[in-house]
Image (cartoon, rainbow, N blue to C red; front, side, top):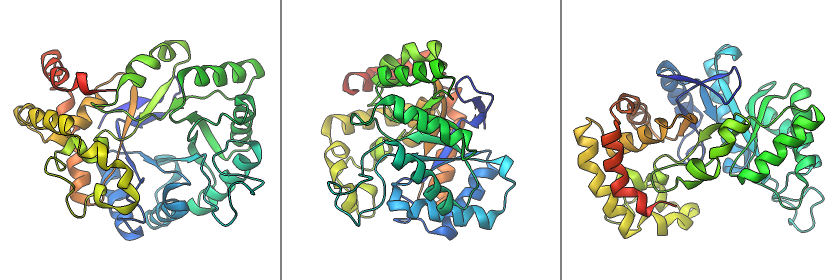
Length: 329
């Protein structure tokens, strides 16, 4: 395993990390979560990603139960959570004082307490604003995130899927007021979705030292090749709550490109999935690639991608680009 600094901080994160979106509660219970956390940790993974919205809080509860079972020293691992959508569905959003889809101060200051309770932790290491909120001033959200850190409930804060200009604005406001600045961004990044990381955010790496904890290196499974003949039973795409993904997963042009990547992966001694994960991890601006898994076998396969990173020579990368770049957004 490689370890990289998270942005300009002194915190070192494993180049591959383990996330819980979709899998925890839907496919993974606390027992299996503990087994996979242990296997990932043994392989050198030190960062485990979560969010309050994942399974409406159940994902945090499962991760918390697994961490208690494992009993690791708190210094030895990194946990994150993210806030924006909320989890309370008992009151219609239009009537709720603390409405959903928000980053207002009332919501954020309560959300962190809820996450810590579900995780069973005194603090999270990383906390994110899970999406931008056009109805709340950036200054209000940035100050609330600073206050969460000052209160000792989180150590670093960042954003997820924010436009570059909003990240820059938040950083400048924090710098002006002496607040803790946003350190990291969590964007989607894979062979078919790369322009935000490679173009839009490019100035921020030098300007503010932005670090990246990227998600969906397999494009929700598209880059494994499993969707070339449609939606297989038991796959992520077959889940009712993932129906919105099916159009992308069955895209004919992208699936044809995936088929053309298979011999490249074989030449490197890996699978399609390992090639895709390694491709994301090879980016010097990516601090960690968040992987997901619903079984120990899948986890082991993903972690095997590290062996391919050094084999991605300029020539190999050019071959990969020739297949995928025209289809990327």
